[in-house]
Length: 302
Image 1 (cartoon, rainbow, N blue to C red):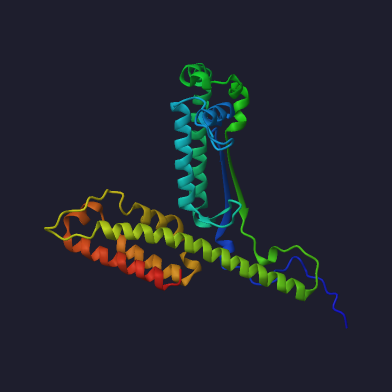
Image 2 (tube, one colour):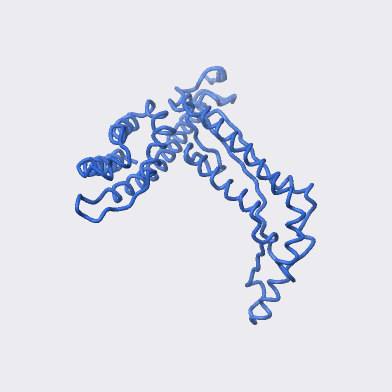
């Protein structure tokens, strides 16, 4: 007998992945003027001067020279992206990243404040843009081309800040009309995809964590009486930030993460950089704990 039973789309096909309720996907898009442009004429002139083949030289010019206001925006955007990366995990090639639900409001507040600062800097750049164009005529000499400088009113499209949040899909989110066996196979494929993506995200975090821990271990590797190794007060900041923003919020979803989180919390809780500098026993004990954590990460299968 042919089975024509359709899937009830209101019911999940399989149990939803545990991380789906504990994470969301976020896409941060920041657009900023580069201030650089290829000069085709100068490229051809350089090729002719150096007797080079056509199309082997590319002359790129900074159309505003060293503009402090534009440089400030670009530096700010770089820092903002670093904060975004530090609070999220890679998820897809399309730019979406995994954000633990427990840190959603912290992330959103911080990025919203950064967005406001971004537009303050952008407006400062707009205020000086006309003067910067006039100054560019002197700075660039024969490289100056008035066609490279649109009116300030049209520059707004060169700057934007966008945040999009998307719930992490589960196998129950398939809205399809197909036979049970087909739906089951599709759900199983999605579950495999989900597990692979999640493992990649955690693996990326662990790779970064190991690099942070290895740096700490190397900086603490000296004994009293030996030449001291210089380290900043922020030596452990990367690890403690990762603990707060990623490991702790996600720890209850994976036994390996729970074990590692407890280990790192015990290692760094209550330890100050000054204490590490002054107390040789504490320094060596902490180094040993850090090395043990590195070995634990490697043994946990990441």
